[in-house]
Amino acid sequence: MATGTDPTTTDDPGGARRGVRSPARAAIAVAHLRTDRWWLAPAVTAAGLFAFIVYSTWRAFANADYYAAPYVSPFYSPCLAENCLDMRAGPNFPLFGDWWGLSPALLILIFPLGFRLTCYYYRKAYYRGFWLSPPACAVAEPHQRYTGETRLPLLLQNIHRYFFYAALPVAVILTYDTVLAFRDEHYEWGHMGLGTVVMLVNIVLIWLYTISCHSCRHIIGGRLKHFSAHPVRYRLWGWVGKLNERHMLLAWTSLISVALADLYVYLLATGVFDDPKLF
Image 1 (cartoon, rainbow, N blue to C red):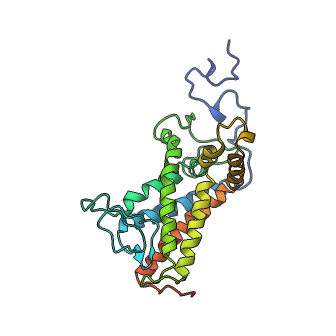
Image 2 (image 1 turned 180 degrees about the horizontal axis):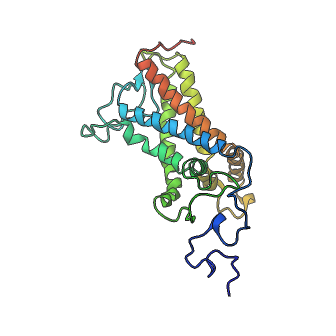
Image 3 (image 1 turned 120 degrees about the vertical axis):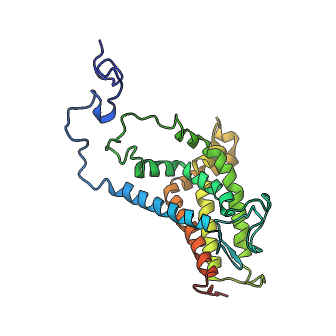
């Protein structure tokens, strides 16, 4: 006879009552005993991610004001369609020809956004902030049962490593854009404006976020049985591991920096102000 310690036993024949509602839980009337502001962190997370989603969606579909010589928005680089503005500050690979009539940003944003959406930290962030699964430690989720990433659409989270491979060339191209940002509006070398600093800070944060990824750490040092036989990979694995400890910070700072870089180019392109020259 079942004892009731397992919510899937005959004491719960339908298997519907799980988590805080399972027969195995202590007989406490309230859902949790936390008295702190446990809801604040998931609320701030949800607000921050929602703000970025709204902004990036608007800019991706705008299909305008993404180039101000010599700067190009990171949302639109590289351009993979022929309907781009003059983007001599960055590479233009019209692989999709002239049949693509929508915003060229929609062709490239899927890769960095897919990389972020499937990132281990961001999974925790939007699981807690949007899906409340669970909203905080020691606070039960409102769902009757937890299936994790075993069903669609969450099953797609397992392709994170492949998005990592796709995000790498995007980071390389954005690095090239940053190098070209050291030219002036006449494409003469030796220029450095405030936009150059914005682009430089952005690409540094993007690279730090990318290489601090859990997938990068596993690719470098995963499945090694003897680190002593692979001293170079071991050293790289340790370095990436230290960065990985700050993955949450790098995730947020790089997310903010890429939005600010796009916003800066937008303000220049719309004539709100001129790019201040540093030298």
